Length: 274
Ligand SMILES: [Fe+2]
Ligand SMILES: [Fe+2]
Image (cartoon, rainbow, N blue to C red):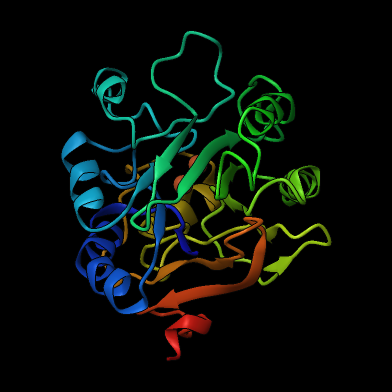
């Protein structure tokens, strides 16, 4: 299968780039399944139901989130009827929505997606390792699921790498989100799981993490909050990772970063070069 994962959409420029370009990318590259992290798609903070629908209509199969999931208050309500929107799995028991689900891909394959949040320099959460293990054990790769994609939303690269090795051989892809900067460590781990510490954001890279740079620079200098953070509005780079999996085992055969448009040097994965 051909899988594509895109990192956090930031603001109007990030979501517009993906909504406008994803249909052609899915079509031209014959992608089987697409996951997009949408936690910053509504003015940088959370996701509205209308934006969720636009991203799904553009070709995303699942939208994951992270610590910003509840920034738009309505999400607490509409997430119950939107099973293609995931919030981190390791929120306390009783939190609205779901953190993992099994989906049917365009080619009929069964794909499990889980969203989990780290605990280093993040809010106190349930143990992400214990919670993800239960979900993966219930849905074994190559038996119940044809592919398994894990969005590890975390600050610390050490915690993301640990999650990659913890799940190595049991899932197709462990990819980090949240830090908004793509890392250069994409690889297939020894057990066959594709891994990348951070997918990067889909947003304007002439910014601080997708936000207009003046206010973040001001806050680092003066330690006095001034204006609000607002998303930068220059042309976005679409950033993420592409994985080709073995149809029999669900493990990764190839992994490559994806960066399209905007300020970052373009990087196109193997199946972009046909
Ligand atoms: Fe984010
Ligand atoms: Fe985040």
